[in-house]
Image 1 (cartoon, rainbow, N blue to C red):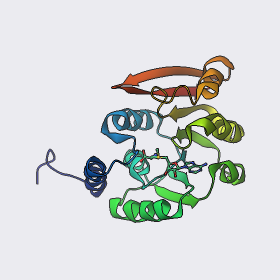
Image 2: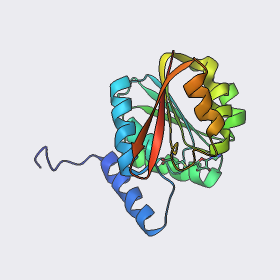
Image 3: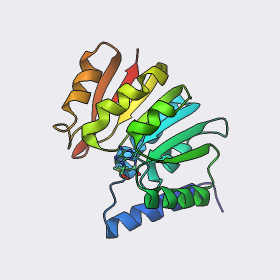
Length: 189
Ligand SMILES: C[S@@+](CC[C@H](N)C(=O)[O-])C[C@H]1O[C@@H](n2cnc3c(N)ncnc32)[C@H](O)[C@@H]1O
């Protein structure tokens, strides 16, 4: 098989989840905003990633596919069934980093985490984004990237979050439009 046609297990799992989402909508980040997420992870090369909102593992696999076995992704999902399916998808994807899936409410779980994070992907309950960030803030290294999904379509529900990352003086933040939605990418100063 040539390099051009070679497809990793991770790519196969990602395409399968995208196809499943076309039939029965799943709120995954999807291939377009996902491409941007993968690029940011590739640039940042984080050792410790925190994800808030695993669903069935699509974005965790997407990020993990950019990282080596020196990295670890901790991902939090409130619903047990989804977390279990995510676990199966992660095994099938066979990506290098360790992926630790924690079932629980991120508002309860984040304070218990001991890692210092270089990258955070926030994609759970929109009205709770600012709470997730404030709970994680003491565990963020200087220069850590915080990537928040749905900053376009749900901007009204996460107004307090957007105001905080743009105006608190603690982050350098930018909004990136992707199709009909957008993401907010903030760097901890
Ligand atoms: C938009 S989906 C995540 C999609 C996933 N990041 C992806 O792109 O593949 C949001 C997920 O966050 C979970 N969630 C919502 N509130 C949560 C909370 N407080 N703690 C942990 N997970 C939560 C939901 O159950 C849902 O699975």
